[in-house]
Amino acid sequence: MVKLHNLGIKGQIWKVIDDCHCNTKSAVIVNQTKSRWFPVQQGVRQGGVLSTFLYLVFINNLLEELQLLHSNCPVVFDNNYHSPTLADDIACIALSPSALQAKMTTAYKYACKWRIEFNASKSNILSFRAKGQGKPSNADIFLGNCKIQYCQNYDHLGILINCNTKSSSRISNACSKGWKSFYALNDMDISRVNPASMAHLYKTIVLPSILYGCELLNHTNNEDLRLLNTLQHGIIKQILGRPKLTRSDICEQLLDILPISAEIDYRKLLFLGRLCRMNTDYLPKKIFTSRLFSF
Image (cartoon, rainbow, N blue to C red):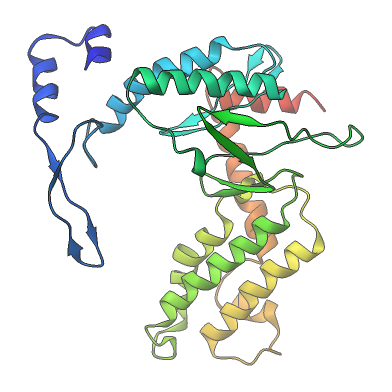
């Protein structure tokens, strides 16, 4: 509420927002069992209309402090990429262990000042290094008194990122999600469902879970494409009730489903179109432009 007041939100509006967050209680439902009601001492209302805006107001000062630590941060064509953030998911980018530690220290001090807690056990470090520059650094990085662990793969906003920029682990994870989504549909006994309806469910439920973030896929090899093709071919043959040796391309045509490689290219082109139409003042457009002219 202090931050809202500093932004100029005062008077009756400020009092209404304050009243909405006073004497509030919450309960948690797990496996259709509701817990006891407990008081909410801090934080925004779960699912509240203003919650997203209020959280952005609360976290904005931390991002400003991280931005001031501009030394040893990636700079491309005068664009400073320091801490890309989505809601409460913050990715700190630094060019050296000391710069990363400085960001962790800044975040920890901010958390202590405003009575919030960062879960260090859910945080990891990905260390990238260009070819021919030796092994990546494994210097100890701390968030307060908690040491942050290094890892090879990290799930960032639902996209599995590999420290060697390889996509194999990500493809395997996507295939696993795809099978789980399909088997969830399979409980309805697909033999009794029209294949056209099942194909529609596949394209609207299963395929998005497989290809989420595929616009950022690069360096895919034949093995990656084979895994994706095996997944799609196996699913569409089950939808049609055909044996495994049935020609996959014919099955795809019967259900009006694009080959998986064509679907990935289609989504990449849509993503490219959105980037091209984006306002030049937005950071993603600046990153896209700088990468485009770097080749």
